[in-house]
Length: 83
Image (cartoon, rainbow, N blue to C red; front, side):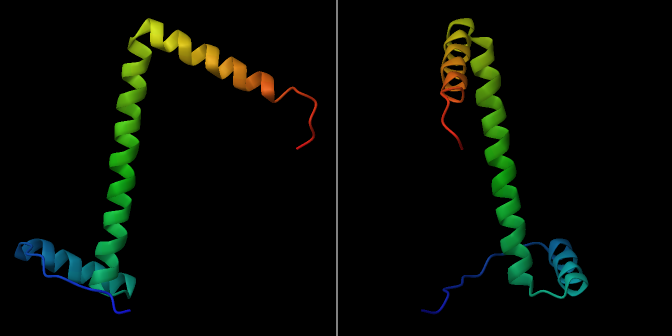
């Protein structure tokens, strides 16, 4: 199956930088964009995770539940079963 592609408009300065980076990395511009997108997606996910964790820590009741659950999981590591 062939990969489907589409056209995305970018400004001239971004195109110039993309083209330069593509040459430096010796990779097609499409691959540079794909890898940049995946890295950005990871960054967004980690940012959202950090925000959710901070919100959890602000709620004392929910944070206490989290601590108790972690303690339960820690106990499972001490059940004598070899890894």
